[in-house]
Image (cartoon, rainbow, N blue to C red; front, side, top):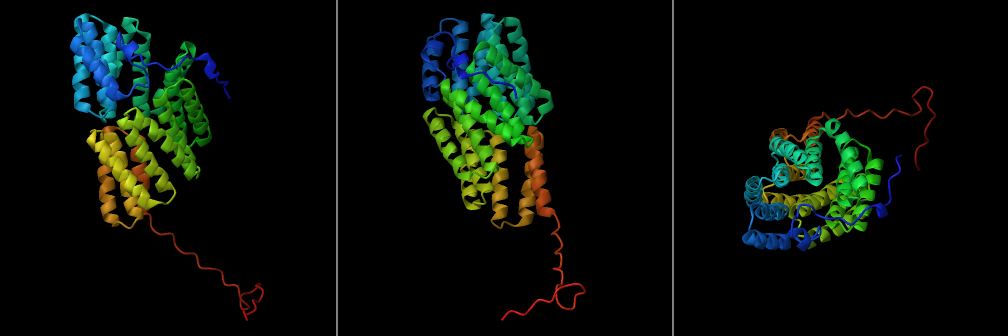
Length: 370
């Protein structure tokens, strides 16, 4: 196993998407309501196109994290236009990174890839190493979500190496948890757990609370698969507290969906149904179709276990398969297909118990019970 460096080699986490004076006023753990208020004031007071671009970028990111996708879309486009007016390719790259991330969050994965690829090109020509790295990371994450692991596994490793080389703990946490997720989805649970736990440790020691919340969710997922239900639920409670403190609306919804997954795996189907319903409402409110579709799948499976009509479940699975195909979620589509196969499989024929009595040749006589 490759030896991994100790956290002392890295600095504290920082947020390069907050630029100029905003980089001084805001930090990686600032709540997104605080970010939105500070960035909105900076935007109103901006005297140059570059200042407007930087402020609009922070407004876009705050709104995106708060689940306000329309406002986020308006803000990243304004950031791009202002960056173009300033002639700053780095600012334009950051704006496209934000737009591509928003598109991925909204389930528009082909659009996400186009925007992020353009961001990579702009950043490459600007000399902004961080914009280039974040845009590449966005492309890698988009491919991972689509299930295109062969295409992005090496890129994740390259980005992890870059994070180590430059002492960027936040980027390391992102890359490491992404690699862990690919191991988890392909059945490498021990390796996934090792990476998620290390990611959570690095995030904690680097004061990257958001990264720790996502990493703890990954740890809980793997522990749940391995049957450690209560430990998984405790970690999700810790992560939920972080999400609420930082106003992480999307992360909180995914936390609730994972809690539902844990209940489902433990056979606690009524609790799973309640949590999937909660997560579904949260995803719908923030217009996040990927999370919505995943919650619908969990809800359909829970209702099926609780006695729902099989034909109704199969009809919903057909609808979900179409949604996952449209969004481009291969792993989720495979889960739909697997559950449909389980529902439609013919019952296994009962094997008659072998007769074992005094009339069976070669069998010992069984005395009658008194």
